Image (tube, rainbow, N blue to C red; front, side, top):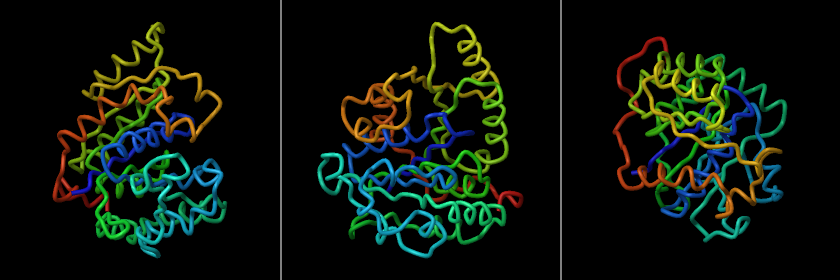
Length: 267
């Protein structure tokens, strides 16, 4: 059974895409892995791969059922000098028109989104995928709810700001409480010598009852995403996520359904 990990966050600049792509890279060492860029508000993958010919369509089309996953997912092993068939990408449409369309579909709670995700069998090239990593937008509540529904794990990337903690609390109460996915907060750009950050960590544990993982500030990613660096062992974030990936690989949390209880307000 395919393990689905969604990487969620509250605002751009949190480092969620770096975390998501690093997770996809590490998981690809353990099985066939698909990275889905579902951040329709700030799509960057097509531009960063510097190889637009590998994409024949977008995650926008897949998530509303217009095209199949098998049609759209592309093997990117050759782009990053990885073994063929181990890592696939599905990027989001970078056009403004497409972004606005997704915003409308989200606000309308378009039922095609849930149906496409609920019916997905996670098969590419005739074989089931072992792992799927979904990189989500900072907001779009309906999309986030639908993605959470099919997720075994939610990795919530948070910068140490009180406002972002409040958003996480709200999502725990209003989205994640409706599903059986496991929520794992990650404090990104953490500085252990900063007293304010230590106090934030304590507040996070006190208010959410969750034990966060911590990733320190990594200079190489200060100026933005570096895809060729992320998909190599030179990626310093690798060391902070490898233990978490081992937990997923060795003891995957698999469920027959993502629903924990009925929720009229969610769907």
